[in-house]
Amino acid sequence: MRNPILAALDVPTADEALRLVRQLAPVCGGFKVGSELFTAAGPGIVRQIRGQNAAVFLDLKFHDIPHTVARAVAAATRLGVQMLTVHAGGGRSMLQAAEQAARETAAQMGQPPPLVLGVTVLTSLDDEALGQIGCEPHAGRQVLRLAQLASQAGLRGLVCSPHEITELRQSLPSALQLVIPGIRPGTVAGDDQKRTLTPRAALARGANWLVIGRPICAAPNPRAAAEQILNDLASP
Image (tube, rainbow, N blue to C red; front, side, top):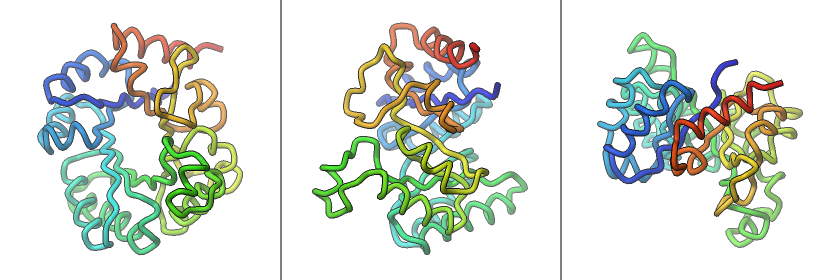
């Protein structure tokens, strides 16, 4: 089984992140670098993780005018990341510019393009919260609308909550990769994530990748926690 676990390095320093990478690299499929770590440690932390032959999911959720997003995606591609995120709410032109920049920059470097992932609805938002920001107060319909837009714009992957996996698999091309945050083993509370699922259930519904942060990285023994999740996924 390909290891689907992306450990979220939601820590404030490069030293903490690299310590986790050394512990977890043998039992994780890659590492998510998000806003906190990237702001604290800069592009250097991506280079250091890649220097350990580990895959990087750069989760900065670019959302700006198409030209600006294209330049940001090109810069991320030059860093050597395997995945990166843009907000699907940025519109078709922005999404197309992001995908084109990833492909063209990677071609210039002679390497495969990173997977540009459209972020649909944050897993911290529920129906009430969507209504408060002026969106249709139904997370499932909002996710599907943005997912279809991202697919039509040429994106090859999406980020969505576990609860939308089944509908997206029924509505979108089967080749589209789904990266799923809000993953919580059954023994771990959901904290601020409102739309969660267990790792095994998410894969069964059609997830390709599982973003897991606190249940692994905040555990007393992060490697043991990751190994337990991986063993659970591999068991019949």
